[in-house]
Image (cartoon, rainbow, N blue to C red):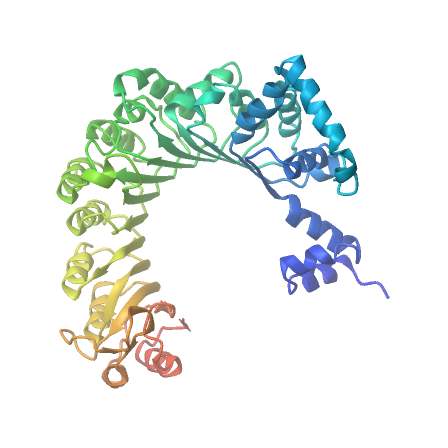
Length: 496
């Protein structure tokens, strides 16, 4: 008896991806799911037999249509130049020598001979031409990720290959690229318009750190971003090392659909450059931005050797104190490397319109949380804070009191709990020999539960409470916690 295709798809939901790959011959439903899993996300980096076989499969339209996500790192160009082109330039004498060696070993190899490759290339140019044809013919490609930095010996050769998918109807483009290589790409594509991207993720590297030579490249990049004015909704900017991007920010035109901006700020001077550039860009987008994400980084370059928390804090204060975002509703700040005072300034700056806050990455004491919750005006009713994800924290009855008092309209609260105490000011007690095998004193946890039994928050509108079970002490009785919170918070419907 045959089953409807929808039923097979529901059955497949309960089967692991690896098992599905082995069951592709069961029926058409399994075949299609297995093929989608195999080809929906592909990557090319190093020249190999597997890469050649994958290229050959992608020449088949039924396979090509399954590709949704493409990752490219053009080391294959260097490999091809080092093998194909080098081989074609060898002297006649050396080729005869190699031929003699091949004949001598023929009998040894014939039994172990691998299947012939489906595609053959005489030169690197032949390989790149085929790749350009294949990559520009992936009809359902939506997400494209490029990694291109280093590889000085290949020059600008990879630019044409890497640019070929940009002719497709992409939704998301992620560029992890040096400014030197970005110039090659932009130059190879300057006569054509970009697809109507909704997301652009820039992870910029600088290979020579000579700022004067990069002005034209930054202006070209700004022009590219500005050309997405009719589609771009999310922009991410991240630097591998500190670099002045103020010219880039200043040159980007107004983006009427941009509603999410994510910034990663290097720890060291000049951070993201002259604050005026970013201030002007943010204020120009005041009526469009709904979500702002901020974090600091120390990935490479001078940030690893000279990072200065005070300098970063001063840069952030100088920047965000002058920014006005009239429509921002969600603020995400990673406290890892970001000074608490600077993060708090950002919250205060945007608190009048925020409905969602993510404030994580460093342990927050009760005093910190008192300052954080006080940053929100108590008179807010129509646009009260409805969701918060905060932590790590030490959970205490007084902390729950604080949230209930300051955020009576909150609907969803997520706390990353590091430890639990029965009363604010108590020191958490742990047992265990190592940091990876430590459990909190069960007596403290029991006393916390007893304290919470005496509390009732009848006016608190909280419906969802998540205490992040992966972070709090393992020996706590989750059923007891659920019971006591469901009884004390009358509006609560979900406890995780």
